[in-house]
Length: 217
Image (cartoon, rainbow, N blue to C red; front, top):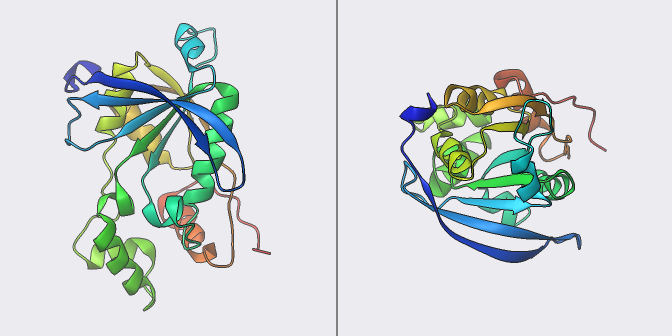
C-alpha cells in the first residue's frame, strides 16, 4: 500500500520555540512539505529527540511517538470548552517531547468539514443533535478525515513504524491501510469538563474512542 501513496517531500525545516498558555515550553523542528495529496498546508513538528527515534526504526527498538492532531481553531487557539482538542494538543506536545517523535498538525477542522460548517454543526448541537448527527444533518460524513497526508508526511520523514498517541481507532486503521505500521496505540488522558462531557461520551459510544469517563468535577 505504501508504494501507492503519492510522493511527498520535505520542503522546509525550521526550529520554532513553543510556549503554551500554562507556561510549558518546548522547541519544535517544524517541517513543511511539497506534494501532499489534498494540497493543504499541513505541518509536522519534530519534538524531543526525534532524530534518534529515526535510528531506532527497527523491530527490537522503540519507535517514534506520533500524534496526528486535527486542527481545531476554537479549541487549540481560543480555549473552547466544547471539545478536548486544546488540552490534547498541549498534552501531546509534552509527551512527544519526552519520548521523541512527531506531532502532525493536520488542517482538518471540524473532523474535515471546515470551520464555518463546524459552527453550523455547533448550532445544531444546541438543538439536541450530537456531534456526529449534526455533521450528517449538514450533508457531511460523520467523520470526513482522511489520513493519507499523515502517511505521506511520515514517509517523507522516513518514519515507517509509530507508537500512535490517540484514543481514536480510525486513525490506527487508516494509517495501517496506508502502509504505516502502528506498533501500539497509546491513549491520551481524558480531559473532561462539564461543557464537554456529552461530546466525549458520544465519541466513546459512537466511534469507540478509548475513553474511561468519570463524572466531571
